[in-house]
Image (cartoon, rainbow, N blue to C red; front, side, top):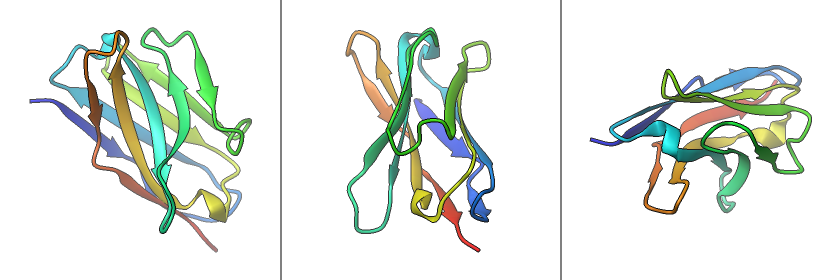
Length: 118
């Protein structure tokens, strides 16, 4: 059974930090590029960050560059998103997404809420 399970969301003050984890199971994790998306209330889901299957290349949305860092550990079947200098506009449900490096499948996690508020 394929699963992507996010954890680490919560409430944080502006300027604070939060780290999200995505635990994968049921598929060959190292064959999948991993991404984090987010969706704020009333807005479309947007891509936040992406990392290739081997972890060699990362990309970020302009809105999070310099503040967020995506990483992965293929020995633990986990992906991470470290979020620093958080802003209220970062408030959203954050989703983990896996896509096969040759387009042979994709999976979504159930999401974790991140709220940035004083």
